[in-house]
Image 1 (cartoon, one colour):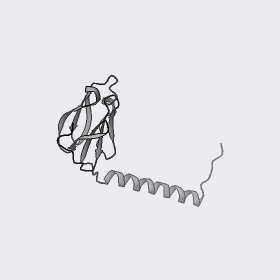
Image 2: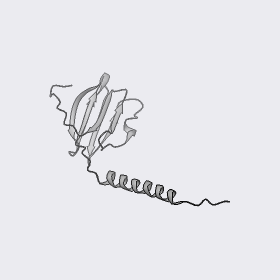
Image 3: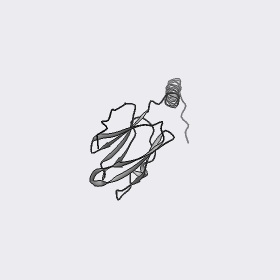
Image 4: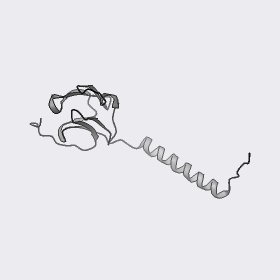
Length: 125
């Protein structure tokens, strides 16, 4: 078996790659997460918005009388129960970072984490 010797250029390139990797890990590990809200959409319309820092349980009335139970606990949101047949939304796990979402296609429910403070009309269904 023949060993390949690394030249000076190879060492410099690998050092730069390692340095960039360490910087990215530090940025993502210590960067403050601005996730403040959990927005609930049913059939594309925002129906409710909750603070991610307040523990609660909320029943979402979805499409064709489908229901999902959303739980917010320890700054994370997850679907505890769903009336849909496949229950895939329950298996999606917990979300807490901006851009993450839970989706229940049969009930047309989308729960997303956002740093926006979306105002929802109290009369919204």
